[in-house]
Length: 236
Image 1 (cartoon, rainbow, N blue to C red):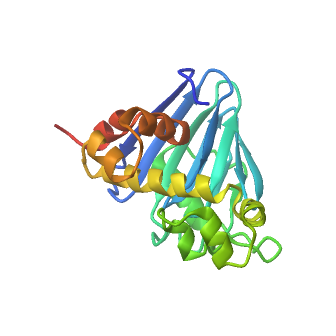
Image 2 (image 1 turned 90 degrees about the vertical axis):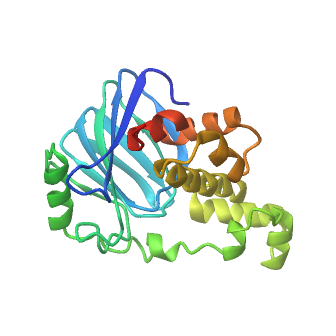
């Protein structure tokens, strides 16, 4: 669970409004729950280290490294004492992020500013398809995104027992179908908050039991409260 020993600051990138910046600073090891983004996540480690666990393996970036996570790929993370990491969330169709289909690490770039990080990613060779698997190949059955369809009913539609489907889904995507659905709701809520929607309205629209429940899950995934995240993009 994320604690107050970690500080996340989110903000838009002034030179390119389509890119979001999230800076993480920790004073003790912390972890974040599995989640995903609609953008390519680029993590430049300035101090310490950060490990990103994905269905395609673990990727550990140390000081000076850049870890790239494809759009839509579930990942959890944990890190070192006194780690400092700058995260950029870059649209998948951005020239620098085009063609990112597997996670990869760019070693020893020591890029500091957002522009340096973007340039490093844009000039990097794209990683190969790790054993025939890529983020694009991790195609979800569309029914999984139907929040109203019970997992047992979905399993039956796809020819599985309930337990068998959950196990197969976890092996492929790194989380259970129920956890994936929560992550999808959180990702949608994050986009709504960024557009200025009220926290209470977002929590209700996303189907969370109450605002406090939504807030706890949001913070575990993204390291900030919904209100703090929203305030970084909405000027009142």
